[in-house]
Image 1 (cartoon, rainbow, N blue to C red):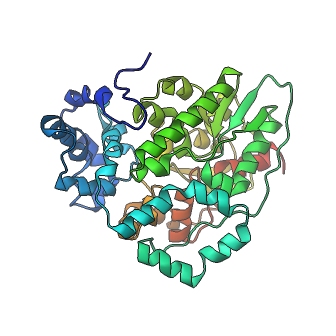
Image 2: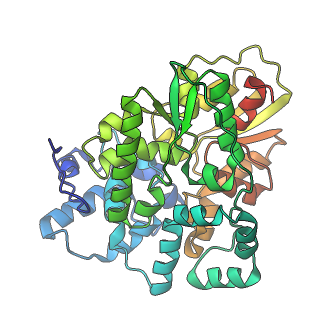
Image 3: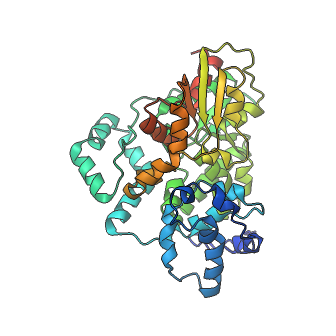
Length: 407
């Protein structure tokens, strides 16, 4: 049976969310949490771009093109407005649904298409990583990127390493690992740490035969294509879940998309069933009862940045819970600010300075003290922090692996 609001492949009428519009009290609590509005006062804010604009479209027709639509591209999709709403309205869903309305120049369309399909390019480039890295950082290539509107920042390099996997066949504990683009193509040591940890804990671990989760696609307005990808991913992962596997990911954006976007944005019939079987890697480690209490750690202090998309899952901060057990003697957990990168957002030239302004409290917090470790779960948060502080940033699992596996 189709859920209320399901309109078929490639159509995104928001009937399932229109009935929630009246829950918006116009209290503007969401505005107080918006990192874009705090740094860019011309931004209308989540209330106006979300529920208010949707009411107008309901009255005048969904095909109407409004000048305010051009501001939709300024939304980072950080989900802080969703968390702030006292009545459970999700402005971000309306914003993502309407993202395709943004009118772009030809070069911006090319730029956004390239960024949205990073998973496709990663699959190609990872076969020849050394040559790909040379080409990406060639001055001529950089000139082309500048012309089409990419920000003047370092691009992530493609990893030349290979993943080593083994199988604990017959184990009652089974997990399938959704790598995501960053761990698959750019920093495979993160994926290797996850593999080593779960195999050390006796899990039969398999790598999901899937690529991108679709976040870069719908964040850049390619909703129909993202839906097709969501349907494929859901079908494959549900097969694993029905065979007793738990779905894990080390990328907060992938995990959030699998848990919520497939259900909320695309109204997939099996979205809720999939959501129940998906875990952030550290979330499952906490549920597993992993204890690092009593572990002697060589790290005196650590700064842990909580990614917005991890916070949006409503699971607390499982990595911080594990880190605080003894991995570091002094742990600073920062969950009050967005780093400003927001996936492909910070790679756009016109968003570059705004991206850095949004993340400045995070950068300052790190530079105020000589922390021995700087940690975050998100690959693009890592890129943003490293390029604006000069500090090396690790994923929490890369530190945990040394204590759990002993490598």
